[in-house]
Image (cartoon, rainbow, N blue to C red; front, side, top):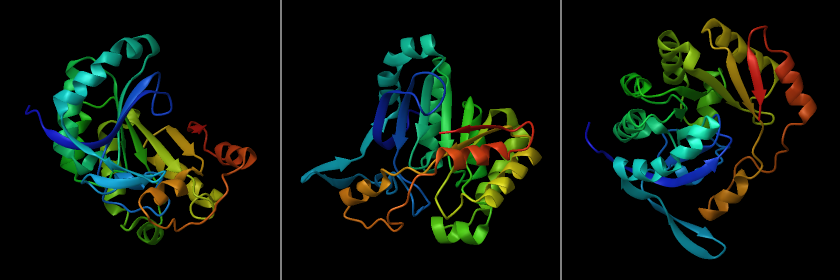
Length: 257
């Protein structure tokens, strides 16, 4: 496989919330969605861009070869091996740079490094299928099953996302974890979460992560001189998310973050 080039905006070493064990998270730039609650707006544009942080300007994003990234990450392998960890590809959207993502994952696979891919599923099925053979676990976002709401709040419908999810579930359901970002008043009702539980059971996906609202998101929009459209929202209470967890059908394992 060619040593592809790609654009990343960060590499986070010693992360503990993006998969099992100690992990190194590689953030790829570029995303086809424009979620109004996005907690990484600096990830959306594929090209490097200026950020203004504390009155200082920095450039977000750099072009790298897959082998460069792997060379940096491989230094953490001793921590992966001792903790059951590995590498996580995140974004942005991994499928937005499919050749680069596949080159990374293939090299990690050859190096015996456990790989998690975080994805919205918004991309071509053939690209998702290509990276699947090098991926140990997919963290697959499902924001809402309501197509109209999906268009309003993410800028695109959910047909491609759900079609890809169904195809991937036919291929490797045991390697999929559904992740649901809970946005107060938008998609965190009992009825909407129940619909997602039903879909998961139909697809034989038995692991779901509920992600409570990230209140740190608005600050990042200031870096880009952009307004945060949702205003001030409160994170869901422990009691409420516990209620959402408890209504899951038998056999569905729900974890709250």
